[in-house]
Length: 278
Length: 354
Image (cartoon, each protein chain N blue to C red):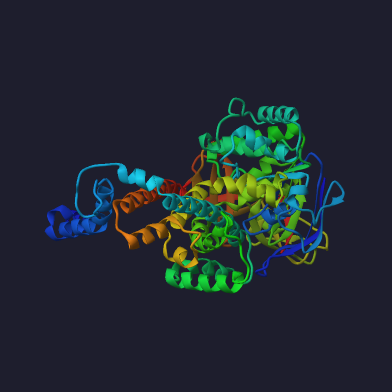
């Protein structure tokens, strides 16, 4: 009996050399590049590879670089706008799939997650072609923030499926009795939605908003295809800086992006735990 | 007053849940819809609430046809089986919700909430969140929330089934008290016959989308109109019987019958006889004035306040007999396998068509 029980316990990896090696190999391969970027962002040297002492100068330079600052503001604006739009669309589609039975419902549900599996490069190219055909002749204006509209549309296409998925997972746990109780007490469909369904979705809304914001902030490929010379985002700007010269300022800029992303992801994960309980 | 007129309903999957049902529930009544699961009692309740619409027929509340009216525009309120208390709102906000939706003044809302909180005895818990409440307390919130709207009728869907046995009995009496005090019509769905008998002013027994019998608990219990009702309400002995050419009832192995029915009864029929009406005699023969049958005790179950005895009659039929504690003590040697006489009176029997 005791022998059998022991077999079901997880293997203690510290007793075996091979799994231990594999673990550390994976950790180093994953994090070493990131850690080196962070370390070298404090490097007091024009050359990126030689350590010359600790400084905050690169961060000051990054802050006063007008192009970089503009790109950063663009990125935050795009992320905020596409998060809000994705949330509204995500809530509507999840509610539709939960509340109604209609012809093609399953098909519609699976089509929602299609942008997740389509390769980003294909999305980028197709959006580029699409925007040229549709908006080709019309100028949306080059002044801020009208110049960001196309990028926002593009970002919504890949943020919305994730948002919709997280909200769907939550809303499927909702008891129909609650909605009927609200109807029974005099609330119509709209009122009941805002009073009793939306509060239940709150953890899913927070988690998916953080997810969407991070995805939008980080995106390079799709943005690269849809942005113009007067609408550069932070990752695209970092990429173009790299082409001229690899300076520690790029490291500093990247570190800022990493910190924001990690914080948002951790926040999202903390809330996400609540999505599937209670 | 609620009137159901010739209502039929078939679900999209083809299941006919209500078959030409008609029913009248009077104002201020505590009315129970009783039946086994799948009999359509909950569907009928949901139809009064407005969650399902009838295919045919009408639902009238105080004489007004509401068959097509949405639930949020109906003057009836429901207590759900799961209570459906809103988890993100305090007890006060839950109870006030229906009044806030109706845009009633804050002062009036406060008055009405205080009133129903007292009625259901939730004083001091107004600020609590539902997660801090027990099942019984949540149920009170659900009742208070519905009553705060001063509905024409309160609809309760198996409200006691989620509570444990001890709490259920207390809450049962509590509901009766609340109903009498508020004088609101209560319509109560249950599959538990003892619950329906003890709690309701009148009840309807349902089966397969039909209402079989409507009446006061005493009347339905004493005078069941079908063998299903006789068996479902309480426990009963159904004895196959026949009428002879002189319209005298004949039951196999039963002596002392001189019971004449009118000629309207079919030749083949049932006689129903409640177990508590059957008495036992062990070592002697009962008085000739009784109706009697001899058999052997096959099951003996002591239940505390009563003892259930099953006697296998000579005809092979089982006769159930319920003895009170007092009766049991007067019979000395009650044992399995013992030969006994079962006896009862003519007035205890009820004829039933097959």
